[in-house]
Length: 401
Image (cartoon, rainbow, N blue to C red; front, side, top):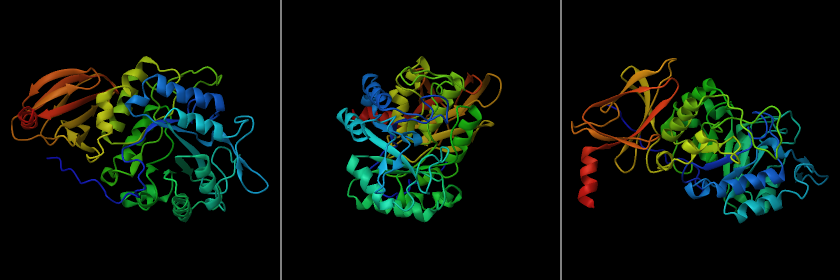
């Protein structure tokens, strides 16, 4: 029988990230992953698209820039955004984002250089100064990478203290560091609200599975105000090699089925969902996945412990006991052929013999009541995402109504 572990209460709580954050980051949007360019008009268009598409109403609220803003330091040591990308500075862009009711984030590094070619200065030696600057601009999220000389866990801790000392609540995202290999994510929950579980996510299925495996090592350490993160989601496909920042494009590296698997497992593992592809153009698979309210309800159930990997009829499934008594079950087909796969209710923690009513999240279909198991064919690299309502829980709902 599956045993669920209580959610950690150790996360650094400054009032931010009570639920896994939902939003967008720049890394794979304009051009393929690693190109990482951003421009003031592109950021404003993306923020507007988040509102116009209905994403904001569903809980997506973050616009976070990666290394793309390429600052330099003025003679007084103050960070200055790249003038070609942000000719009017950063404050007008942040004000525009805030004016839409969204939140804004920026990138830096704990060392003396950032990671993208070492073009830009990191925050080493300027922790207090940079934290105060970000707060003065109205920044709500700081992504702190682990590059350059002098990168260290002490730097993470010192920058966290500097952010807190500004008096402005901001999310701190740790992007790699020694905590990745430490039990319970080491020091990360004590200094940050979001921490990367492993290396960069690329638009490849093998990379998706690497992210899932990393997040699955210690899911119980995540909880309100502290979330292990599988890096930016590749939903719909990264940008293209030849790109125009004015014209959103997608050049997918995975199939629609593989993107469904990515989204299903991020949801059950309660990872932040920060989309790393261009949301100015929502393709059909992006709309199916990102706008699915039932999937988002699984991910956003902060009162429930994150899902765990369990064995299920010869396969691995990820199962999450939701706070209302229902159970979310993600059963991926990691083989190379379409295969009949079986959900075992007892392996999902549903016992007592009364069975459960099953609902297919992606097809938005009720599958009826099943006493012990449910078998269906799952396409290669696709995932069956179900919500199971144990019959005793259903009876309690009816009685309360």
